Image 1 (cartoon, helix red, strand yellow):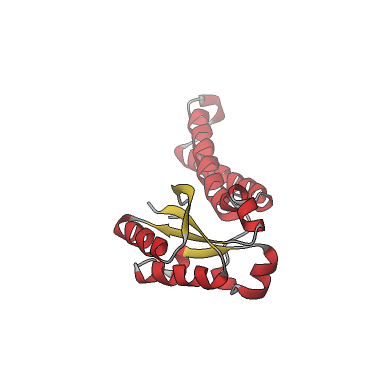
Image 2 (image 1 turned 60 degrees about the horizontal axis):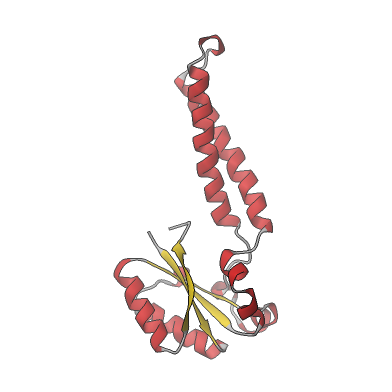
Length: 165
């Protein structure tokens, strides 16, 4: 499982140097992103390097999982009640319906809530610092941490499993 770590840099040049160090340590491009104040993001950061502004994808994944489990449990309970006549296929159909409804509902809620990194470090971002977000696991995680810190990036108090790893 990948772990998300966040580093603070004073400017875009420092952020790019820290990104390059993480790449050299074995972290692929899709596991690196930058978060900055909106005027900095619009003017200077390429779209591919920006972190998402919302919790849409992680919320959708959580919703699919939770809705699927809840729906499957409801289907299995319905199987235990003979007058309902629910078969095992029906229980799985209820589980699939629960996953769809849960994913859709959670994704809608996630689209309206800010990314957890953005929430936690709002003041740091608004002060003009640029955050580097690194998702890595195993040996690459430790190597990337050492390499990024060696560029002068400051580790922030944020370390959590990545929802989509």
